[in-house]
Image 1 (spheres, each protein chain N blue to C red):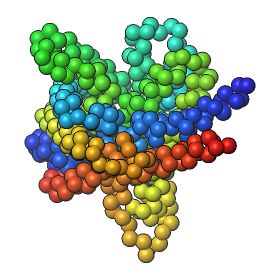
Image 2: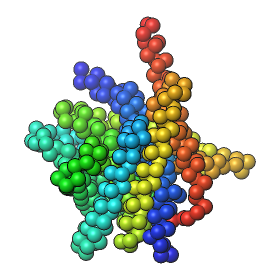
Image 3: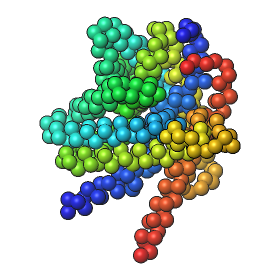
Image 4: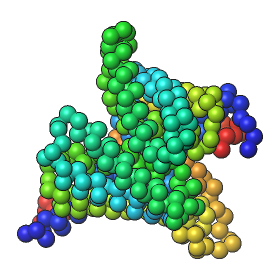
Amino acid sequence: MIELNPFVIFIAAIFTNNMILSNFLGMCSFVAVSKEINTSLGLGQAVTFVLAGTSIINYLVYHYLLVPYNLEFLRFIIFIISIAAFVQLIEMVLERYIPNLYYALGIFLPLITVNCAILGVSLFMVIRDYTFLQSFGFAVGSGLGWTLAIVALAGIRQKLKRASVPKGLEGPGITLIVTGLMALAFIGFSGIVQIS
Amino acid sequence: MAKQKSKEIFSMGVWLDNPILRQLIGICSALAVTNLMVNSLVMGVGLTFVTAFSSLTISAIRHYTPKHIRMMVQVLIIASYVIMVDIFLKAYMPEMSKALGPYIGLIITNCIIMGRAEAYAQKNPPLPSFLDGVANGIGYTGVLLFIAFFRELLGFGSLFGIQILGDWWTAWTIMIMPPSAFFLLAIAIWIAHNLREKHQSEGAKS
């Protein structure tokens, strides 16, 4: 395997291997929260932030705690615990020191623990055998890519409110079709870089 | 009476309250693994197993779990079952385990399981909770297989890896790629919605 530049992975994670549009991770909150641009942006920021943090923690825990003791099979439990703990910690730190940001992100933080994108990035990191810098680039890129997709979708959905949609497709149905079209558009990027 | 009740649980989980079509939860993995029928089936069986047994366990210990840490307990129970599925697949179906990649692990964050644990297992005795888990798992598997049927047939010309369509068939590459999953799920939701409407209006007439 060729050693990939972390920056290449970063770009790839935003465009060609977008978390939502090509890996379908984080769909639940993607559909539920993408009604307003502002809230989507808030959630996107929170996801990026938590991704960056948890990728570092999970990388260290996996390579320095689980691998030396042959406990790799415990990674699901360990990852989910460290994600939950990190989110909790961030919540407390933000509340104490940066209350503005806390109120901006507030409601989204608890939701993030069960966002599949977070756990997904940690698992991809292990499966693809990334180095530390690669993992970090991948995590931040994935977060930004996720934000990009959800904000774009929120923009489209705000316009869609005025459109007349067939009754059975209202709500989730049309959202999925719009996402599908976005995914088609993102395939256009696939020539730039290739990571998997 | 008991029979009637389990029948009701099944019709709720499989169709009336289908987790994917109706509640739109747990769709991450539904979309990701549906390019092949086999993958979808294994994923569906895995999820059914995890949902059923974690519902059973959560329900069995529901009186002993303190209210405020129940989420954490639930996650740990679910994660333990997912690890079992993961190890089983690694040992007996290594190819499949590679193909599904991180999506087996992602069963943990699949909202269906947590959703059932919170909505049903927390309030009901173990046996109905178990059935409820099985029913929801079957509902999920059904939708997965429906989507995978079209994606594999049109994308590869095969079903379960067996070539169905001959050489004359030009494979639709788009069906293997991500966008088609979104479109097909949207269509599935649309069809289900219309069927349900029709069913309801007929029920109202008679």
